Image 1: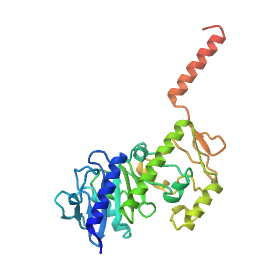
Image 2: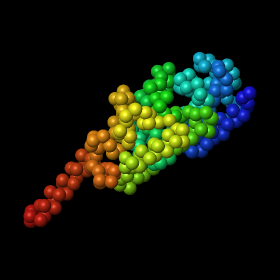
Image 3: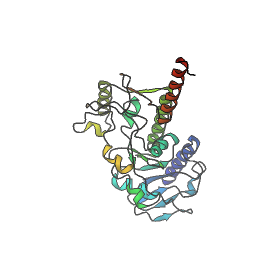
Length: 292
């Protein structure tokens, strides 16, 4: 029998971690746990996730009707229930706004693959769902194309949602993703991102399969394992377009940015930078020609 009070305490503990990590400012974010076939514990609206008590939490049924709690349920519980209906083995859902992962959703930039072993093993390709008004059923439905292929999803211009068999496991995926997104930004600021070679990437996928982790790249004839192929068909609907990161292609498709030959990409000059470079060049030539 499920100990509901213990589950509520676990939700409060994860809420505290979300708040302290800066993943849920003010009253942001929401957490849920399915305690029965038709019963879900969820966080209420308008409360800081860092200061919740077990008595603050609500219960709802799988249709989204509140069945208990002195506070009003979060309107975004529809998102949680959509995931639980699609994947009955999922017990917990965590939605929040981790800054670095959310930045990828704001920029509509696909999270590149083939960079960090832990991300290849535990996350895999991360989708970006299209934007809809939060709290609506349309918003909840945006995750449906991806929920069977990933345990963490970036919500365009909103945040992330992750899910698993426990509250802590559901939270883990978001923490791993945000740390990875921060590393990518820092590496790019240093000058380049170096990607795995094809043999290195396939070795990690083999290890992932050995350990029993599912990955869409392990199914079918997917030769382009580093080029974010898994969710490419959804990019147009979500407004997603690679701009900052261009992983190497192993199917003969050339990356969209320059490469140093070691699987890394460097930043291309912007139009303003090119104009400045040309102006400086013209000035230098004028001086050399005695016209300065």
